[in-house]
Amino acid sequence: MIEKTTHVPLLVRDQDKALDFYVGKLGFEKRQDYGQKGRPRWLTVAPPGAEVEFALIKGEYLLDPRGEEGHQMTLTTSDCRGEVETLKARGVEFRGPAPVETPFGILASFQDPDGNRFTLLQPARGGA
Image (cartoon, helix red, strand yellow):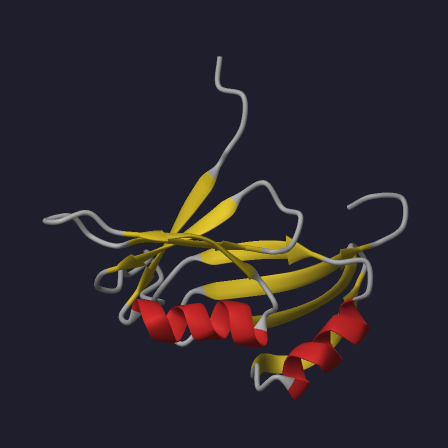
């Protein structure tokens, strides 16, 4: 039986630049950073307190069926408006108007320097 997800890969061109974005701008923690001779560097980050880690894998872009680059992931927050202001102050650029109110919650979209797309979601009360 599969019990939980532990790592989600994100393709990045430059692991150090990606690390700066995730730690310096998003406020994630660096969890693992090591390499073995002849093997690629293993570098992971995660939001503070989160169990799932993002593995920053050096590689090339993958195209999704719509021709857009990167992955789409959702990160939840209890204060989307406050988080947007914090991230904007750190230099994160949001896609379109941010935040936006929807029937299922308040959301804002951004991407990392390598085109991996994220939605920051504050779920509507009562669940979404």
